Image 1 (cartoon, rainbow, N blue to C red):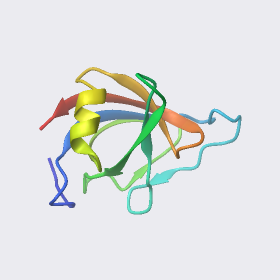
Image 2: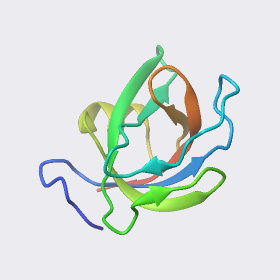
Image 3: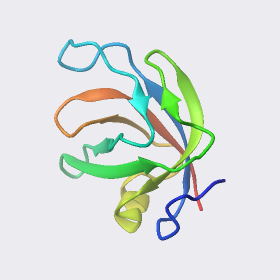
Length: 107
């Protein structure tokens, strides 16, 4: 795993970027250096957890694709409690969803 953000702990995930967002609009390509995605938790209440793409080998994610990569949650401890390994959750920009994230492993 690569760690370009040295103070943030890595999490291995699978990301699937949809072609259409939850509002019916086209999903743009995610560019790792500028993307600020969030994973959405529904339990016990709706909450968004910000993360960064933390894998130097992944520079872009195109709509309709699925990749395995490393991310880092800004609130690692809260995310680790909310999204146990194997969890499948929506991710997006905080107002609409744009894909799915599956947590593979917290390191």
